[in-house]
Length: 333
Ligand code: NAD
Ligand code: TYD
Image (tube, rainbow, N blue to C red; front, side, top):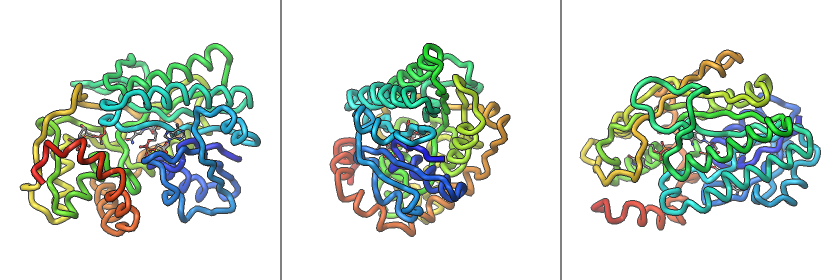
């Protein structure tokens, strides 16, 4: 197989590329990635270079996409603007990439007559106080990020329904693991804890997220790509739900810091209280999560501790300006 992996230089995309090439020694991957602030060539270091090519391009660029898709057997689309906080300050980029970009990629997959697997999120279902979302739950996105992802999903379903395009969707819960950009809760907390900096916790810190180790999600994606039915949605919920404050406290323990670093700050606008997702349908295809939160967070903290060469340049670049804008007035230091 030769796969076109859009957004393969980001956090989950690169986790997928590493795993897929290791598990499938004769497969080749073309990564198409715009290399935004979240996409990095470094994320693909260590993979078999003879079986990987990287095309630096936008998924909304129809010509670049058509050239890259030539000779590919399937598309996996990770490319997205992916951070809720940034979607609150700059929603336009999300609509351009997550909705319009998805359409351009899908059109190319349809023309090529190949499978398009859309990587989506549980956030399209909105917040759930009690119980667990299934694939039959209605879409009720609340942030510009989740609304743009829901828009992408609806285009994917419509292409299958209207043209018979071989397209399907995975919706996963919150991922964590190595190489996640430090704008997200877990890496931000780890890096601030290692540096002895304050840790910003939104609101009361009792929002609940359903944590999935990114390696496990990468394995689920291949199971769905291979065995999933066109037109279907496959939810991939992680094995453990945790309130944010518990996640933060566990990271403080693992980094040997005390809880005085925790700083409660103004809540995120429109903050979803809880996500909870069943993985039953994906499990029925033969997948099961292997890494629980406890093991995953230990591995993740160890990875960041050992890989300052990866995160050092991020902490001093564009991220610094973002951090100032996002937290400057909320934090003392
Ligand atoms: P990420 O921000 O780390 O990576 C996104 C990648 O897409 C980057 O490499 C970036 O350069 C690339 N990209 C952005 N805009 C592009 C464009 N216009 N054209 C080409 N490439 C572009 O995100 P992630 O956390 O790895 O998430 C990957 C996918 O998984 C996203 O679609 C996201 O919605 C979905 N998802 C993420 C999570 C999570 O917890 N992180 C959970 C469920 C689903
Ligand atoms: P995040 O990692 O941004 O993922 P998502 O919003 O997609 O779930 O945030 C995870 C949770 O952590 C969410 O409830 C918001 C909260 N959070 C904080 O409390 N402080 C922070 O600095 C960040 C980035 C997130």
